[in-house]
Image (cartoon, rainbow, N blue to C red):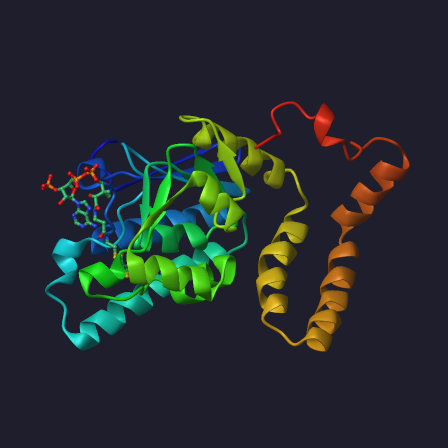
Length: 265
Ligand code: 1HE
């Protein structure tokens, strides 16, 4: 339904969540955040993986600047914390999220993409953090998530200069894990989501929850937590069945990427 600000459907256990305000380049208004929040809750309950994408020419132009101009300081804090809550439910939910990026991925759009687990960049994609030019700062978790992905020096460069980077640069800066030909990002995201949805749900949960937390821990703490997560995960009935399936030669082997159709960047 075109009047929805965020579209939602589940097909074969994959949730497809689409930013759907193309006339405003999918700029994120308060209503978009509310709609996204509902879709995230549904996807978490109803799907085994999710694909996030944008309708129209661009993934997302970031914060709706028309709304932002009117906020007081305390309203601004509440607004930012609201984005944090919603984006954290993507990052720290129960299912993997794959993001298909095309056209502009700007400001809050990049903050949203950074909350997902795998990012696929269409060859026509470009990213920028023009907050400095607009007289504002990141507020959707970017100083935490984007800085961890590409490093503070690169984030400073983007924020201070307002310059854009293309898909290849984004991949080499760790902001996207895949660059694909123009027009194919969503198809690639779907393929990756399907692969992730085929994993044991508890493994996916452990991967999503434990990796970013362990990254933020001291070394010994990380190793300690890893052991517990590993032991808990491998003791599930599903893990036992999957391990036995491999030993019985009923499970797929790991393949050489040269033999994997359509797996390349
Ligand atoms: C918007 C927004 C928006 C477009 N808020 N209305 N984000 C930015 O600083 C990016 C601002 N946008 C742009 O630089 C460009 O619009 C794009 C590169 C994304 C796309 O260009 P283009 O030529 O395809 O579209 P357009 O003609 O610029 O925009 C079409 C309409 O969308 C137009 O409205 P119209 O009524 O004149 O048709 C634009 O005003 C509107 N539009 N982007 C509101 N962002 C939690 S903190 C996060 C901080 C940030 O995200 S800062 C970055 C904000």
